[in-house]
Image (cartoon, rainbow, N blue to C red; front, side, top):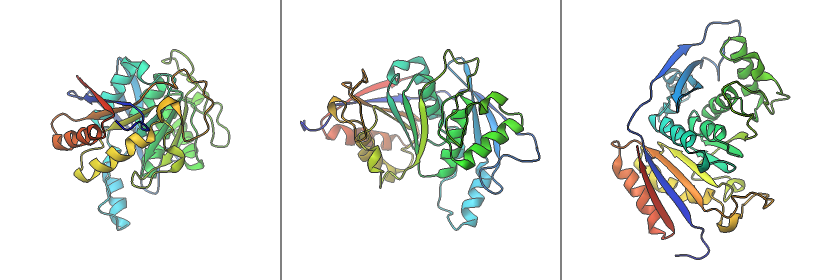
Length: 300
């Protein structure tokens, strides 16, 4: 074991069941809700742990066409879908909130951000959505707003949030407390208490990570990020680097008052049990090779 490296725990969550969800198209309004030109959103309700979580999604065909028109046909449009793995992750976090309560959480390759939203609802102190696709991050921020979470917004996402209310897809109190694209302090009846979790997003390339995010988090969520073989090694390399060093040392400003500071960092992996199993095995092998990982397998 390398003494200067922290001790981490990796939990493998294998989801076997796709929880039913229903999609409802947004009604037409004078100002249609869009991410970019010709990319509209629809509203989906996902049942997780006996509660309904509202999610906005972008049309996969429209996003694919946008990539083709931009000469980027190799881009992946499937962040627009709600992955079964993200539902499994959300279920796990809401059933076991101690995994993230009071902790800083990264949602790595977040897609629509369901895992991160669940972490915030479960009591995380901070959630940061990480994805290379800015449109995915915008959807993730909107989804955190729909969960009545304090959310840092840019001007475009704020406009989309206002359109959600105008279209009748979100309650008017969604916008209470918003000021200059910053914090939302609204509440909804389904929450047991007002969330104090800070939610934000960062454009993130795991081959060139932002230095400010290294060794910053207590927990890293990874939902269905191993479907391509070429992603396995980069993810296995970056995920541990996002976690705090042993003793709670963070790469960012840290006050040392968090009761979880001495806890080992945790990587929570949710991955389809049958698809690309070899990628998952390779990922876990790479973590074990370093000699300081304890892998806890949790299968539904």
